[in-house]
Image (cartoon, rainbow over all chains, first blue to last red):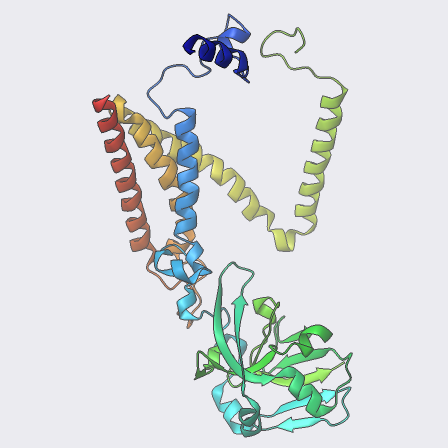
Length: 231
Length: 143
């Protein structure tokens, strides 16, 4: 029985996929790596893997909230609700907003709208949890509250195929306007937000009204929105 | 394998076609850098490329040699592991420690004290490597 076992095992054993170096060529040493005191090849690979893991661990928290406490070398902390461009940099001042803020909806609409801050506040009942995802690599998801864009478009009698150009109070800059396509404009979660985390937006986060919608890069979540132009 | 002596390379047509294509790509890249010099800032690019080599050869390599001299032979592999882990972390942290990208009036940009954090990360790397070395030494002892 024992002999049978050993013979069968020998017969069934797969050929070694890679012959040893010495078997391939007698001139070669038995291992590719000579004796030395440094890291072995395997050790080096493991170390590079560990270094990659360590670098990931101390940065990935800038978009994975659960790991934010470990993100010691991350340029942003999602718990801070980061912004890149402050109101001061954009030349937007609180005094100017308080003086006479109006949100207008115009362009290809039947009934152009001009809404005051109180009008907007009365409409701002829709809530959605949406991320701001920056192309720089950080992101945070948070609960937002605001007016659904499709509700405003319906009020104004905008056509079904209308796209929306969202314009900011920001005087100049590459991102003072952004385009909301037909599909995004009708998404129930595309909001003109008044609140973040249950609190009124800060000026740096686009007070009094900012665009926040699904599937848009952070720079296109336009802040300090004052005009929607349907095209 | 051909019968070429060890160390010799076959330079057949594939090599030369590949080399020509590669050099053409390099030339195209350099031409692009020069043509768009307002955006690419060739002087900075040269500083980056040459600077990296100079820093590596004149600072990193001598430092590594000093470490190699200072560390007992049995610990050499662990010193290497610690350096291989520490170097990319330090390189990554350099602009953060320098404060590149800090935005005046914006506390959410570079919110941490990166010098302190880098020190913490370095300590952690040292601790992990020390523990790994200890574990390896013990298991070898037991065998």
